[in-house]
Amino acid sequence: MHDDRTGQVAVIFVSFRNGADMIGYAEAAAAMDALAATQPGYRGVDSARETDGMGITVSYWADDAAAIAWRDHPEHAAIRERGRALWYDRYSVTVARVERGYDWARP
Amino acid sequence: MHDDRTGQVAVIFVSFRNGADMIGYAEAAAAMDALAATQPGYRGVDSARETDGMGITVSYWADDAAAIAWRDHPEHAAIRERGRALWYDRYSVTVARVERGYDWARP
Image 1 (cartoon, each protein chain N blue to C red):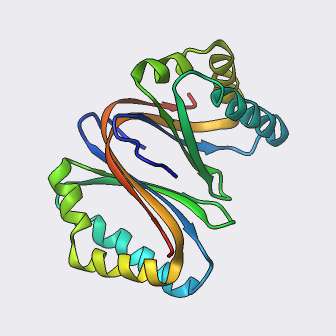
Image 2: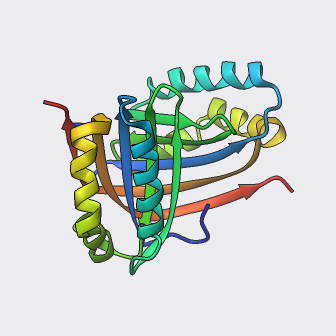
């Protein structure tokens, strides 16, 4: 959830897993979550996956430079190659600039 | 998944369901998906929910006017009130403008 994300860059990753190498995938996903959180300009992540393998991860970055630096991080790039080789049937990446938002919580 | 979404408006809805009224929720969610798809400027939706109730839905719109018209649609507004009354513990809405993106599929 967010406070005010206006101006941040949201990277929307929609992926379809194929079920191969579940343990390797889980380890890599946890490692990437931990590594992303240490990167300059990291502002958070939300992630959900259906039991059929379709998932959405939205990561938030202070600016475009931070999002691009994470895209180009050597460990991230290496994991992306493993993802293409092993884990995913297809995916999309959509990069968007946050214009507004709000939170609601049960009073 | 997308072709080229550059310039579209992405509405990122992150929600935490509480498990109440599962059938009513499922019916309303299906009805809203169907209604959204008939709205002017609708460009698609991706949605995933974890078994613990946390979910992400990203809907895409041709422009801000289309996204706002859907937000203000009377049936959508009525369902939102039911969501606050019954189904959700908390949620966030983040509106972002798509700047770029790409798709990958296993060759």
